[in-house]
Length: 123
Image (cartoon, rainbow, N blue to C red; front, top):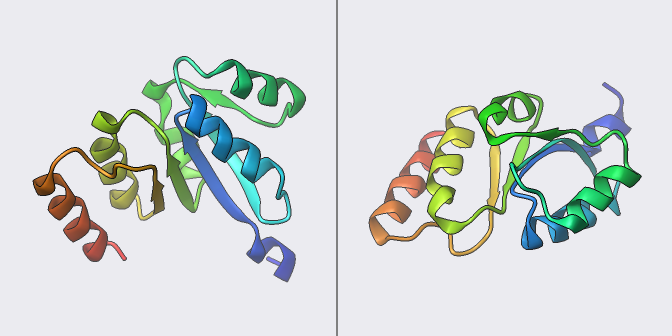
């Protein structure tokens, strides 16, 4: 792997609604820094759909196939509804991925402690 490839972070985007689309566009604006391994969403926003039409290399996966783009990624961006955050954080950490999660992180203090400890175990 050459130096240029080492600088590019492979990312799986989970959640392509309003906030996920913002992250998607931010990553698309920096192809020298990000390579998107897949977008996971059963109902992506119109904005995300348009981005995918303009960038034919972007692949959309249903949530049932989340493992496919996650396996190819070094990091995961989670922009789903809050009640799904803990599930995707846990899955990503168990797969050894770096995690960026939209706020709020998780809905309860207990869940914060759980994902924090899991993150320490997998860092």
